[in-house]
Image (cartoon, rainbow, N blue to C red):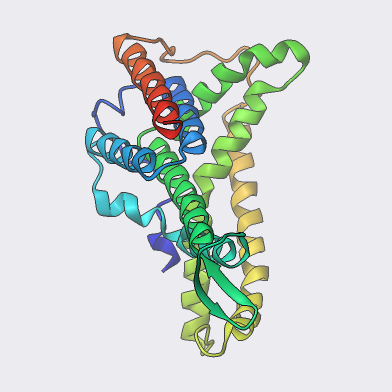
Length: 266
């Protein structure tokens, strides 16, 4: 069900990854994304997978739970592989039927693109699993603070991004609740082909939008009741400060990017 999707959820803990500064985790995720796009060989992708598994182990997160976070993108990754397999030009034809042809080069490129999508979502999920929404907001705001000099509303952008991420599980739960309520009244969301299922899902849109606006209104009232006025003059109970673990994490991510670049250009 939709409620099983783990994207955007936070799981408290005291692991090495949990204790890192949110800025370190945000920039570390950016480093990992750069490494993923530099990777070109199976060895490079294998190293990235091993590194991601090591981070999951250090964060003390259940592997099956983290793999659940990939559920929303499996279908997209599969479509990506198929599109590249049938459209990417190549000389070594693996399978052909009439004017449809699958090449070895297309399969390789499709596998590369699919692996990139899965790795990006996997590492991004570890970021949200190990960083609370409030701390994540502070980290994004700190990173965007230099942009205030050119008029960029750093605090407001950070708050909107974090609220959007935080309410993904809430909206999924609301959708799941609406589906169950309509199924109890005789609605069927399983029968028919793809077009039929899409048509059956249309009645969900109105109650889902109503529920989303209700949640947004309740959040706005709660923020006003607590005298929230944006980032100007706000104080924090805990100020973000780097320590030795953060510098070690930066060094490891830098070494990872350099290693991937070297391996991919051998």
